[in-house]
Amino acid sequence: MRPIVHVSASLAGGALLGALTGSWWAAGWSLVGGVLVDLDHVPEYFLTPRRRSVPDFFAFWKHFAEQRLYIVLHDVELVLLLGLAALLGWAPALTGGLAFGLAHHLLLDRWGNEVRWSGYFFSARLWRGFSSKQLLVPERRAEQTGK
Image (cartoon, one colour):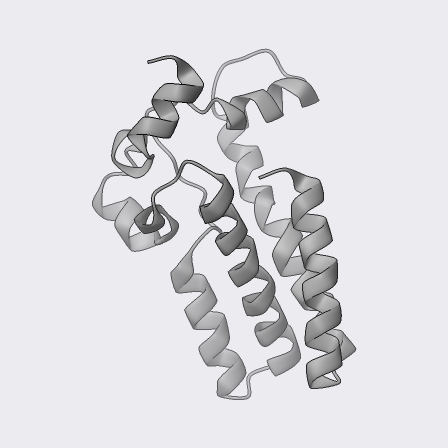
């Protein structure tokens, strides 16, 4: 998913959350959760030997062909933990906002990326040894990589 989509959705989602809850702190944390979750892509890119550039970074993810897929922050379990923390009253603006932002980020990613729905569960990625072959949708991967 393109970054501008996540930024736009996070701004809209944050505004909606702020309007519904009256908490602009939650709205801000939703924006953070919806955008900065993609920071987990950076170490994964730098763990592969390649020519480094911003265009290459985006090409790397658009045509992902590595053996392993980690994306450690793209986790439904993390959404559930943050949501539970918010419900239990543990910094609800922070934890609820992050949960909301991360949740809509994952929904947009699932809609626009080639990762199976189960690939957004850390436990499923761990169970499959982070094997991208088992986590990516084969038809879309073949279309994008020509394999």
